[in-house]
Image 1 (cartoon, rainbow, N blue to C red):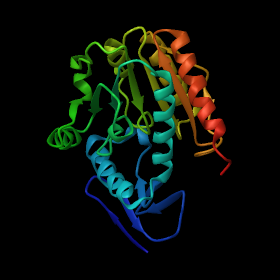
Image 2: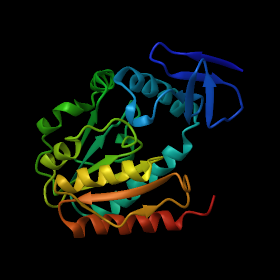
Image 3: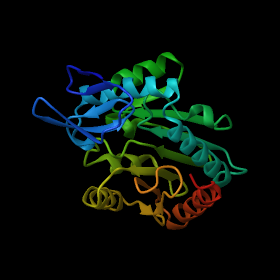
Image 4: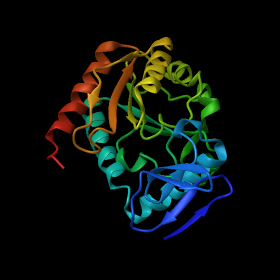
Amino acid sequence: MTQRILPSGIMVVSDDLYDPTRHVDGVNYTHLTGGIYLPVPMHELNLAQLQDVNRLRDRGFKSGIEQKNDALKGMVADAVSNFTAGRSFGIVDVGSGLTTMAPYFPGASCYVSIDIDPHVVDALRQQGVESHLAKNIRDVNMGGHDVNVLIALYMLQFNVHDDFFEGLASIMREDDVMFANLYRIDDARKCWLRDQAVAAGLMIGPEIADTKISPGRQVFWTMAKDQSAADRLAAMFGAKLSSLPLP
């Protein structure tokens, strides 16, 4: 086994052994994905630690170890395509990281990335992707599409500021919707996120438990200013999830 502690405090392990936690030099590290171990809970990671996680996960995407992430992206894209059928739509990829949702939406009229990491924003802009820092979310202009869809995958478990949902709600119109997964988030943190979303004026559709991709580790939320819109997207995604064969 080889392990190293990065300057940010993130631990990287190279072996075939999976341990949910490891204790090194008086620090308890928790497994995230691949060989990435965190020294603090996910929602307490600072920017330098998030940047290391982004870089390491991008390497994981390219090597194929993030197959569950890819499977979820495909299902979300299918549900969104059903929801937006016959209408022009824009996509806001919230917390996109270096591997965006753009390839899954060739029919989108507009695609915008939002991320907390300025390195991610710069890298995507160099690729020709419209990208904004999360702190500037209120400056995002999605134009006059029939509907905009905000997608937040594998990011709500990380650092979410108190005004996060307010910022999202400020760019959402009545018919716009948001899809998010809540991955490895405990009940107390989930309640806090729900309270923040509701306080920002967002309605949450029926919560969908994951029984197929990462059973017992995540649930799915749909949000909108209009309850019926959130409910419709939830029903469409739920149907996609139910059609998957059991793992």
